[in-house]
Length: 152
Image (cartoon, rainbow, N blue to C red; front, side, top):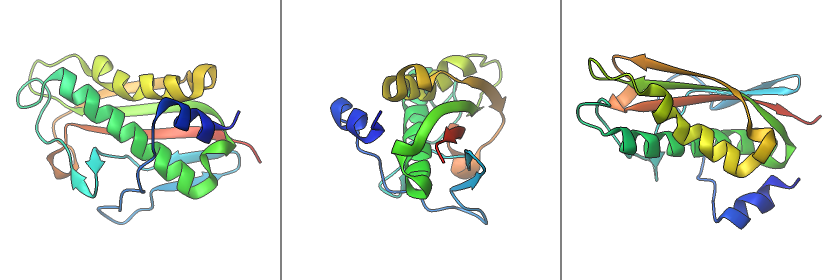
């Protein structure tokens, strides 16, 4: 399937690739796999959300931030190999900056997983980890990284 057509059908426009905030590149390919660096909720070059989930940031807002992170992972993939070369989403890892006692990390990372499902259908079903952490870069509440299989 032409994933660019599916994105257009959903009214989703991939953002420009977020500039790295340290010494790394947004995505790298080895064989048939593309690994993205962790992507944070950056919109228009600016951090869209800051704070810890369960304290400064609601689970709902964090889920929206995870969706932005997911869009940024797809932008990194698209910039490297073109989104239409994606065969399937393999693995999603989501990190959630969590206040003490917050245990809703899976629901937050659903913001990313649900986007991949909307775009890729069955090819968007993936394995996943949702990890609570004490801090994330630039004070963001969520970071998402992605592994995709691509066609040769």
